[in-house]
Length: 106
Ligand code: FES
Image 1 (cartoon, rainbow, N blue to C red):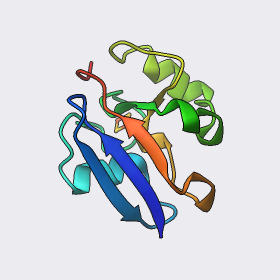
Image 2: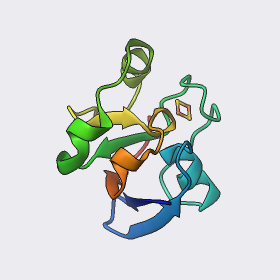
Image 3: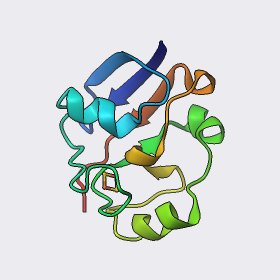
Image 4: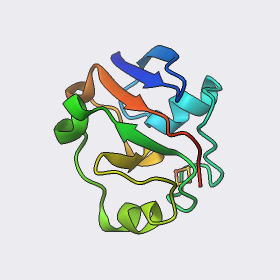
């Protein structure tokens, strides 16, 4: 199992042990974490699963691919560490990953 922490905009932390291969979005939705809407269900077609990867994890999480980058143009308050959480697959290399939910989705 791999540890994942999702921090709400207000600072509330949600700590999970997740299966490798699941996405950050799937964990957020299954556990009703406020602020992750994921309207398209993970198809990289809505930008309502936007998160900020914690600065300590930005390098490990990697950069968005071109399709994700295009969708991020529709997200609210995009920053250098912005990612779509449906495009972040958990692996052992991300054990301990922390992401932050933005103030609102697009
Ligand atoms: Fe729609 Fe991630 S759930 S882009």
